[in-house]
Length: 331
Image 1 (cartoon, rainbow, N blue to C red):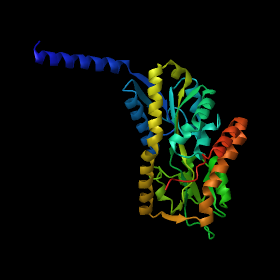
Image 2: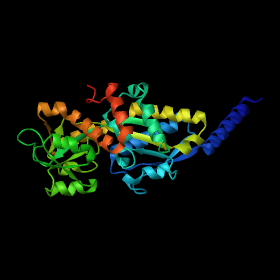
Image 3: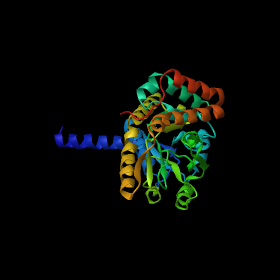
Image 4: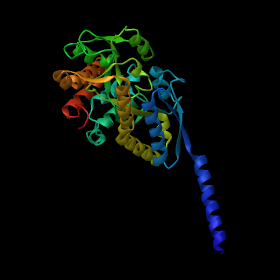
């Protein structure tokens, strides 16, 4: 047979196969609570999509929907019910439905320890009770305080009104401040007008949120860590082939191992940008700096046990008993 013809035929067959594969690819509808104003979370979401598509060999494609479709704190139910297939989020956004995911904020970032200890499977089972399958629970960057002016004279937040949410309340009180509950979209104006002295805020996304325009101090050290959580509608999961399920879990593991770097690079750039805008880095007192992660973890545990009952209490106990407690970024 003519080698040129054979080559052309082979190319045609390969092209036909690729077209069929593309046609056979399944599209999952992914819901997330952020839009383009949250640069770090969008970058991590894009990384998740690429990881899934790569590790499934293109068998799964992702169609993304943001908080313009469903409000951030109302997104878990439409995923549980199957309106959407996949959900990339932070567990704090669905604390009204379940608090188990928030416990991961207090757990060491190491993916191997999270899995080999059995904790990952416990969290998975808890979500399956809500008709959700855990795909990934990766670490994200932590949090900081941004202030309109300097720390108090004693080097803490003593006497300051600090915008908060329930996850931050205990830490703010431990540092002498008064938590003020405000929606995120009201923080800029409240700080600008002096209605609050500062805000707790993730360490990434401050530039896209224009916080450098109203902040004079970035308090250090940062504290806690976030969780990049990925869950899937359980009914949809059960319809996937065993091979595709295996590939999805592999993608989830790869995401867990690499997602922190994606957002950490943005956080480092944001910190430098705010310094350039005039927001100095100021350290808490040595004692407060040493204890800040203890304050944060305890606040999360108190909140989750109060709202999650025996289920949450058992998970918190497991984290403590198995030396899985997050104590700060790896040096």
